[in-house]
Length: 210
Figure 1 (cartoon, helix red, strand yellow):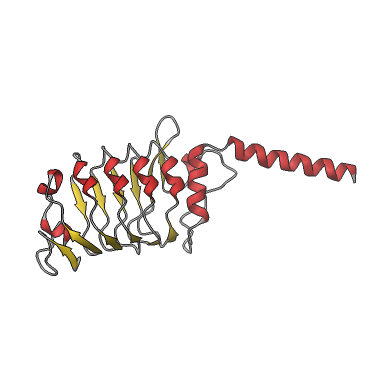
Figure 2 (cartoon, helix red, strand yellow):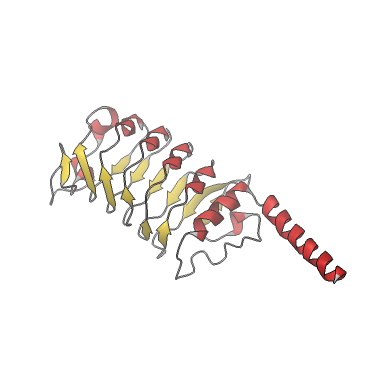
């Protein structure tokens, strides 16, 4: 019995050591995985026993073994986006387009100061666009179209001075389309097919290029 007890203690210590040794990036990605349904096995090699996530499918890292890309577009995933992803402080590309992602966009994503591309289009994301996304000073591509987003367009997004594409079309946004700063250069089609949205880009069909 004493030997069995000692073995159990060793096993617990090993598990605790693995968790402790896991990189913050690995912990954040495992939090994402735990909430997602993955019938096609896109995340099948996201092994929690491997402290380095740089060998996982659909993950790219820099020379310092920090995660810079998540490429999970069109992977038949469903479930929510974990706010823990905001701990990936070197992340530049977050690609979840073409899935069945549900729930809201976490407010914490505004902490991803190195983010260049946030592609969440063609999902089932609901709720409001977080005003915190206006903090993403390096963001060039914000594609949230073809979701179920509601509420107003945050005025804070007007400060995304690096933005190249901001597509908010085909949602259920409401209120008035901002017209200041970067919004002056966004094509009207990027706001199309939001029946409760007022202002430029209000058209509901045809001429909806963004």
